[in-house]
Image (cartoon, rainbow, N blue to C red; front, side, top):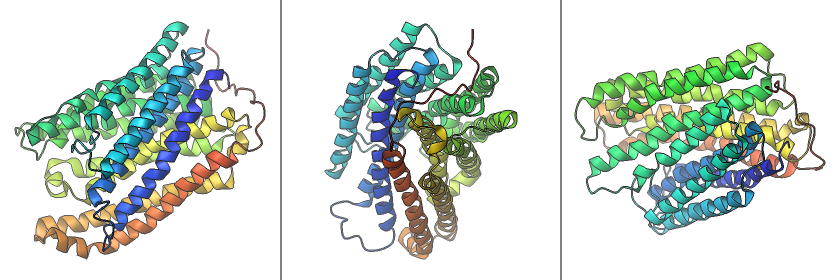
Length: 454
C-alpha cells in the first residue's frame, strides 16, 4: 500500500461482504415463499423477508462505498487518512444500526415506509455515521490541500447521499405526500448521486487498470455527472405517475426518464475509450472483469431495461409487477454491486501484499461468471413472469392469486438461477477471506499505471 491508513478499508469490506452473503439468504427465502406453503409465515412473512433483503442491499453497498472512499481518498490526496480511529468508530456504529434495524424488522419494529423502513432512532444513527464519514474525509482532503476530479466526484456523491437521506427523517400521515418525499431519497440516490459514486470509482479503476490519461478520463466524468443531473432530478417524476399527484408530472417523468439511459451509455463509451487506448492489459484481470462488467450490466439493466417500462403508456400496465423487479435487480447489480466488487478485487492483492496476477484464481473466475449468469437468468425470469403477469392480471383481468398460480414456472426458473447467483457470491466471499490473503508477505511495489502530475 502507498499509505498505511488505506488498510481502514479492509474491515469495511469484511462487513460489506458478510452482509452481501446474508442478503442472498433472505433473497432465496423470499423466492421460496412464492412457490407454495410457507411454514414460517407467522414468524417471518414475505413482507419482512423482502424488507430485510432490500435493506441489507442498501446497507452493504453503502458500507462498500465508504470503504472504497477510505481506500481512494488517501491515495488521490497523497496523504494519510485524517483519523483511522474515527473510521473504526463509524463502522461500529453503522454495523450496530444495521443489525438493530434487521432484528427490529423481525419483531415488526419498522417505520413502514417502503425502502426506508428503518425506525427513527436508527435513522438518526445513520445521520451521525454519515457526518463522521464526511468529517473524516473532508479533513483528509483539507489537510492535503489536494482534490482530484475523481475523488471530488466520489466524495460529492457520498455527501449528496447523506443530504438526500434527510427527507427520510420526515413522517407524514398522508400516504401520497409520504411517497412523494420518499423518492427524494430513494430515486435521487440510485439514479442520481450513486451514479456519481459509480462514476468516480469507475474513473479511478480505469486510470489504474488501463493507464489511460487522467485528464481524458476526468473530462468524461464531467459529461456523466452532467447527464446524471439533467435526467436524474426531474426523472424522479416517473415514480409519481400513479400516486395521486397533479397530471403535469406525467410528461415530465416520461421525457426525463427517457434521457436517464444517456448517463449509463456515456459510461459505456467512457470505458470503451479506455479499452481502445490501452487494451486494459493489467495483471489483475479479475478487477478488469468486474469493472467492464459493471459498465455493461448497468447500461443494460439501469438504462435499457429501465427505459423499457418507465414510459407512461407502458408503465400504466407494468407498474408494480415483476417487470419492476426485472429492472431493479440487474440495475443495482450492474451499477453498484459490481463496482464495489471491482474496487475490492483491485485493492485486495495490494492489501495482502500479493502480486496482482496471483488474484486470478479459478474460484475467482467461477465467482464472477456464476454471478453474471445467475443475474442474467434471474432478470429473464423476472421479465417472463412480469410480462405474463401484466397480460393475465392487467389486460385479461384475472385475480392476483390466480395469476400467481399460472406463473409458478417462472418462479422455479427464478429459484434455480438465484441459487446459481448465490453460489457465485459464496465463492467470491470464500476467495476474499481465504485465497487472496494466503501466503501473506510484504506489500508489492505500487504499479505505476499513470504519470505523476507536477
